[in-house]
Image (tube, rainbow, N blue to C red; front, side, top):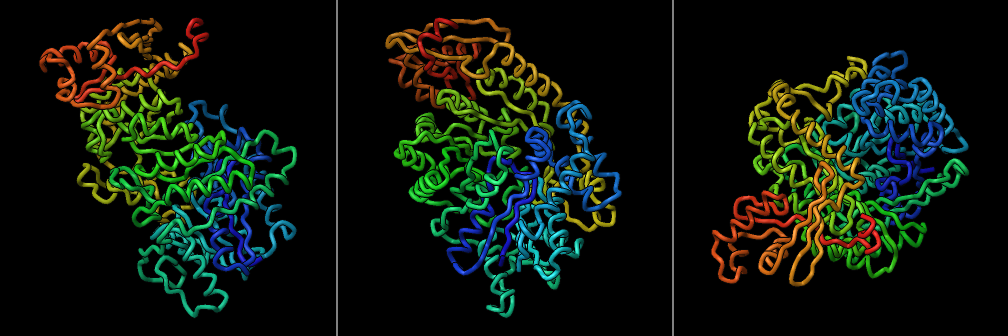
Length: 605
């Protein structure tokens, strides 16, 4: 075997690695003579541990990292303590929620030992290990075992968890590593292969770190045109899945795909998700549709997840229009930015968009400005409304404790949560400081100081190792204690709202309308379970329907058949008090969604 590409635990087991699939396809296209295989040891580990326990562990970064940290540093007590601490924080039930740690690390050790046996893993010339979310310690442990088994093999790490100086610090800390790659891997990996085989005398790209590298490497060597990339090759994943036999029963494969790399917005102050990219590039809608068609046919799969940080806004509707022409029952997950219209989302749903993660982050326009979202509370409510109307499952977070958040930010959030009640539940998450995020780069601007690595690193690694590593997650001094106290009311309100939705038996469809041409019937279910009915006639109906997209009050007044601004404003304010519309300054949004419930179910309700 020339090149082994490895995705360590803990990705979701029902999907192959898009990084490995893309790299393998690229290498096969550019150098057909290379013998390259992709390996997914997380599949076998999930089957051994049990899919339920594997999923729990993978949902906590610290718990996931602690498993292989214990194998990297035998005898250390820190990883076990961190494992249970992380479970207590994630699930709130401590030891009762957690699998037994010693059992998990024993199964992890056996899995990797058997996986790297000669029969399963022929000695490679080059082993490339992809390090993304939750994969750092597992990747290091696998690298160590490969080096022990095959000392002559060159080992290169790539991915978001080893970009820039992160990669250099890993090389300095672990002698079994040979190279790390900054940024995307296609061109640097090809150049490294040419160097190792003698086709090139030296490594010219600044995207590769080696132990001999003493200068700071910040270059990224990227594919200029993404349409030039071949579709990813997932053959090895499906071969491994088949090898699990009965243990794979119940796994429905979902294929990861890319429409773009980077983020076309890239101004969020909390975000460090684009460490590995330089700029933003996207495939054409036709290229994406052709790739999905190929992958669906080859692997007989209908479920896909876009791995983009956010889909390209202008191209996305056209992309899903082309996908709808395939006449397949696709199901897509994607991450979106706020700003898609009601019509665009309806078109995307028609093409198979079923689940989305939208960067809501806040329901206070003041706070949205501070975190750099470039959106408003009204625009956030609009996309929540549109997703509900198009039956697109929405996942969205509220970021709490952002440095510098004010009492007014909290007040706005509490008020505006009432208008978010009819839509998908929001999840509260605490702000965390990521390396190279704008907050990290400009701490004084956000009133924070004394940046230091997160204290959990010293539970994962021995102190002498932790001191050399560049951390992705940091802690700081500032207003953290005040922020935690300040946002308690929001945490409580979100929890009570979500409990009420569960009690009522609905999480969406709590505010719906039916159009009678000359009148409008609105049904509203309140958090206490009461059901209210409203009727709008004539001009009131017309104005309400005109505001199903955010609209300026002046524009709405121009539709009001001679009524003045004061009268229209009074109508809007009445709708706002009833939580049927949302007004923010001079802009207005109607909140009810069009009722598409089958008639039989309407009677039952």
